[in-house]
Image (cartoon, rainbow, N blue to C red):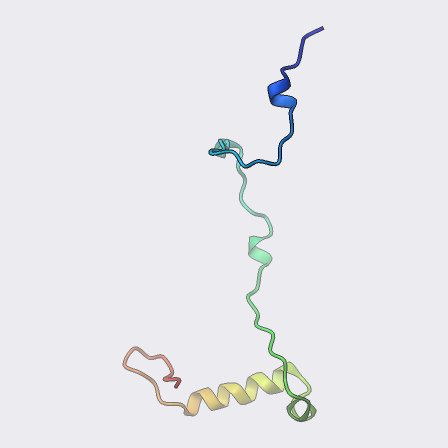
Length: 79
């Protein structure tokens, strides 16, 4: 029977100075395409009574953005 080294079987809570990863076995993240960046905003109760659907909030905000002045780079100027 082959003797197992106690050095490799010992578990410690300490961080090593360096870890060696085999990047040749790495695979692309299959869930990356599913990620959609969304921002969740909490509305005050009086506002949520008027805007009870995300579509209505987005429509009003897009209309507001269209009326705002733009900078030289084409971005909306926000103060």
